[in-house]
Image 1 (tube, rainbow, N blue to C red):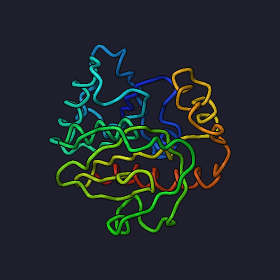
Image 2: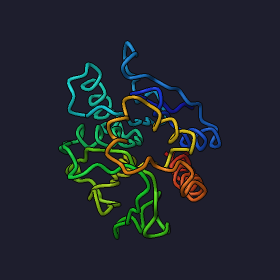
Image 3: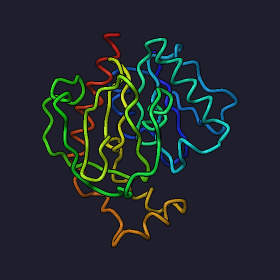
Image 4: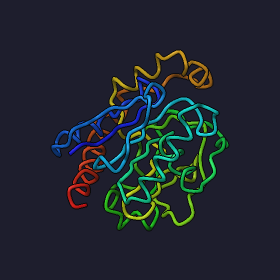
Length: 228
């Protein structure tokens, strides 16, 4: 049983999602969207995970349309999909939502709030509200038609959604470790974002809470896969 993780840049990998996948006994298969000669058939995997990246879902990159088609095929085949940041924006776009610049960039540790729907959601029920987690994005999305709104923040209305019972989009980053955040802050492609801040994000702020949150949410997600 395997889970395909599609990456868009080497430094935005699965992080704590990978920990939960391995705890659940699934095999993890990374696919670099830009380097792959072909993206995987989602129906040959237990689930698809789409990671983040500094590009836009609206960019004219050769892998964007194939990835949107992959998401639609997964949805039609009722295959679980988990999209994070850019991955969530791609999911939203593939399913009929619009992706566009957010009113302001959200970079660092910020609280999110859960909607009433999240109170009974399989992944997010009974979590603290508000809950501080990590963010790094300049764009946002409209919910796809028929999607359930799950979370919001002061700077960005659509922080999480569920489409059907098995497709999730998360704008925030609960998968990151302190080492990942430190690495992101050192990446040249992120320098322009960091210059807009008074100081770079502290990788260790909220680290323990983030680790505990990731274990809860992603263990719930992998448990749902075994019930499919």
